[in-house]
Image 1 (cartoon, one colour):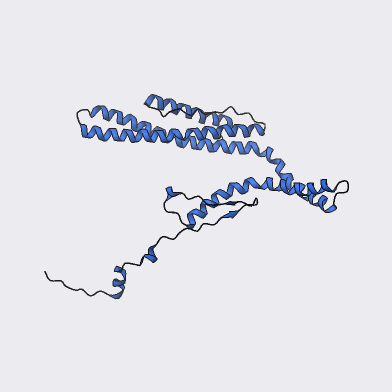
Image 2 (cartoon, rainbow, N blue to C red):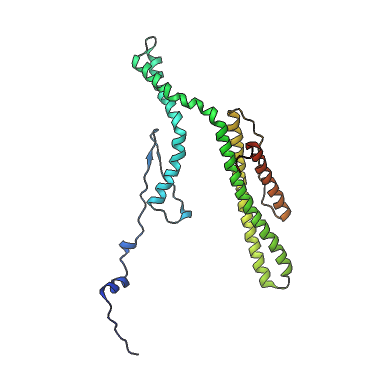
Length: 249
């Protein structure tokens, strides 16, 4: 066999060259950190479930953490701003410093909007209930899908007697469906806890909500148990609709 050399252009030769490792090496992430007013700092979490981390993913993770923190810090910081001149006033009695009195008055004006929070609780509770309802509906849709899959597999398994290869395949699919159902039921407990907290917040706003969700102690093992679980979740959705007047739909 004769080897024939085919001349290639310079651009094509460069395209076939293996780049040095330094050009394809993965950069080590250098995420930012945020120094909190208390002196401590907040760092990004490395979420390996989303692939190899980089600066963008880790800094976005930090931003997601900061948003609720900033929302929760506004009124406590205003309270601290009010307490500082109050301490100066108390220490200066019976003739408190005029500057401390002025600073206290200004801080009190800034803090005043925080006392209207109780009037906004009903709307906050309603939005939380709508969020829980949406999550429950998503969960219901997935559980019903797995339930129908298990029902179909049961029929197929009954018809596959005498065919060990097909039976093994169907059994494997059934095990995977049961594993999916187990994962779905594990998400009920956190939702139930959130629903309980919503009820506590509602009481602060003068509302009385009788909403609860019972998480199963173990994953359903048959179609009847799955159907019972679906009824429990649907009852919770209906109760939220009744509490919100159907405004979430």
